[in-house]
Image (cartoon, rainbow, N blue to C red; front, top):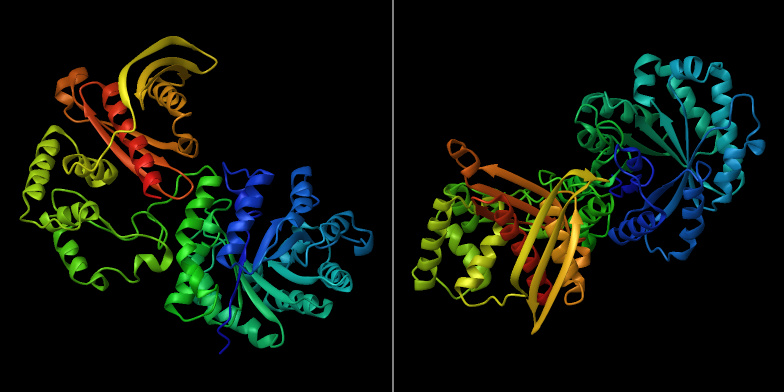
Length: 524
């Protein structure tokens, strides 16, 4: 059995079609570098003839010195009745000067007649002649058989004729597309196996969408049926419900089934790459994602934690560091003393459960939980607490005072301003900022005040903000718990603050977020 499978990434094309995602040229270049470092074999860069931004992107791709990836342009078959040599879209595709091109064409008879409004024979001609034209220009050609599985289920003879036309044109790969995302794994396996057997000398690929939450499973089954190229996106981003998630497909194939997808040493960069793409796409990273999510190796229940501490294999199907992730032992009322000691030992490995310092920290933890703190979702604040109690914390700045003002109605979406005075390294710094709400204004004022002392804070941003009222019977006098999630290109962390004043609670969480970032920066 051929164990080599080529990972084909379409984050920059199919992924960018997801709602709310728009990549700049610089964003795309950064992502290409990361995908190449991961070991992706093909990077589908987009359609060079679709807009000026993609034209510039393809032009600047020449600046990159890629080690693994083959840049692939994307386009369609020639128009109905047209000669490929006279097709402007194909001319743009050739002008991008990529070593490989992906051409999509209709393989569902319904689409040929009702969408393209042409004859079935003309559709076959368009496929055959377009691919032959590009092969004549020295290109590696991947034929994206659009709607193939729906087409096969509707009219298998014609769907296979469309693939045969591509093969006659010289296609190097037949990428079978579950474009509507409605197929099931048993269907994908059987139909892919049929194609592999029908065209034994041609590489077969798989391109799945996630409309039934089956894109990863369908992709894996296609590979098991003989596909040697698997298409998808980082984090599964894409239009509608998304594309097949390469961050799950790659480790499933390589770690579980023994296929060779990316260089083995690069697997440990999978989680950082996933987080990087989330950051560049300005989207919250999915903590529940398999392998690369923040909760993928998180343990909370006392019995589970005890078992994991004895042998991680008891509750982990792979070790976290294999995919560049990390184990989390969550702080909570069900975690137990061993869990708390584990977190303390991350700061001071010499302490035991009987150490006076350990007992003091546990007592303080109980007091804070009684006050409304909850460190299960704010382990960064707990780490800072441990460092403070062990004398291993040096504040990066000292607050002298701050003032927050809220103005209604707002002007141009800005309704708050904050003034802050801090002391850093023997100097006082006073600054002010406006914001969309008092917390945003306070956050911006603090960053502005600290900027010349700690420029590394520029790469940090607030990604989530949650407020919970702890005792609703106290009405406006109730305590509130504030959780702030922050992130940079490498990771994310959550901090907590509790107070009867939402601004004070927010400030406490905000200070912890900044201090945690700076502490990590000092540790390298």
